[in-house]
Length: 130
Image (cartoon, rainbow, N blue to C red; front, side, top):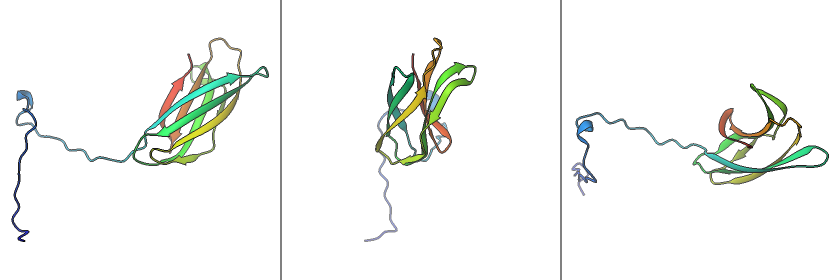
């Protein structure tokens, strides 16, 4: 077999729009990344303790390292009434995890619950109560 001879077969799947004809294409490498999704439920007891159960899944193709789940009652203007976070953990691709956090409930009517997922110091996902 002669490996020095290469053949090329072109396959076309569509037509190039006129405004893009003769334009340079940019090729970006595919990079493995963690993509975290989460859901949560919260229940406040008579003792004014709010228990937050968070379910996470790494939908990405790389391990989410040093991942923490953060929760707080929002006080507005970048302040919080109470906050807590989980111990750091790793979440492999397609792996799921559950975390339970406790917060002291605030009676402030305008407060909302904030849940954030942080991995290697980067915010990957967040959600808020209504």
